[in-house]
Length: 295
Picture 1 (cartoon, rainbow, N blue to C red):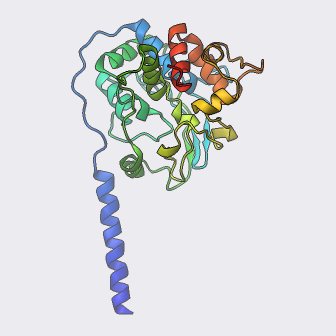
Picture 2 (picture 1 turned 180 degrees about the vertical axis):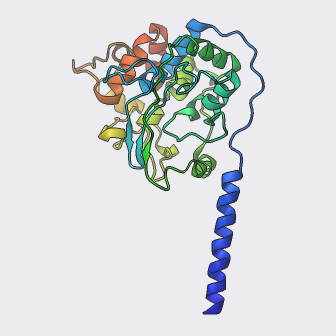
Picture 3 (picture 1 turned 120 degrees about the horizontal axis):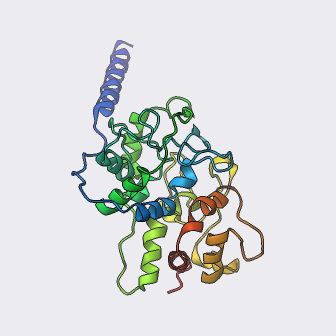
């Protein structure tokens, strides 16, 4: 009995040491200084393509742009996209461009805390310094909103940010956005957008019990999106079997109208309304070309 008690005490001490070590283990790394001049228009375009407005604006509730989005109801609790306006207290008005780069590309806050993976930062890690400078220039034009987004409604232990360090070690990997030799420029541009900025896999890929994407089932659909929504498979054969073509998919990403005359609803409707509706015809055709593997 005494031996078992000693083992239990040792296990508890070892567990405590592990947790303390994990809490002190730094997340991410400090980026190099970014001194490039940003292009506001290109940054605004990239913000649309990346879903920033769609996620961080309560579109259905008439919220101010980037002042905080509608809650994302998940099995772990409700997560509220934060205020990204220029307000220095409740937004990002007191950040530096390097803070912004670390948040966007690494998913780490200015004070070193990892963000929850409801923020789709894994898809942005290949953004260049110029991309970051352009986004930053665009965000500087957003009027300040002096109200905080609601606090996350997440119970223990899922509200512990230090636990995200384990999640990152298990599931975080860079997106596959680099060009593929032998494929057309249109297909490769679609790959860059779909696999990166537009983060289509975030919704259209099933997730495991820990909330990590199932890498072997990319784009196979997700039956358990936040709020009870569903995302269908966007694998090429499945899309073609449902009557999708490059032309009608590009049109749907512009207008929200599907080939049967119905309209996208739920989160996909918001993606179109706040994001893809503003993209160029060339980029929408590229995205459709890539997911349909048409070239």
